[in-house]
Length: 66
Image (cartoon, rainbow, N blue to C red; front, side):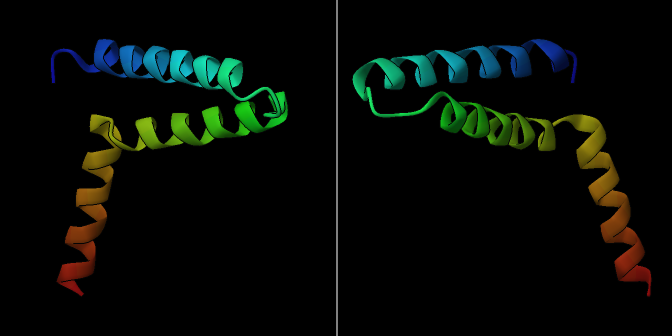
């Protein structure tokens, strides 16, 4: 995957912008909630990186062999 860091960085930036827009629209949202949501989104984006996918494939291969 030759666009590895750029695609994920763009996804994180867009997600952050969406959260800021939601914060403006819904004033009752707390900053703590936004931070938690962004951290969960960061984990979700990180799960779809190539090294994590390769590691998941290796684990699935080990499970299939046993």
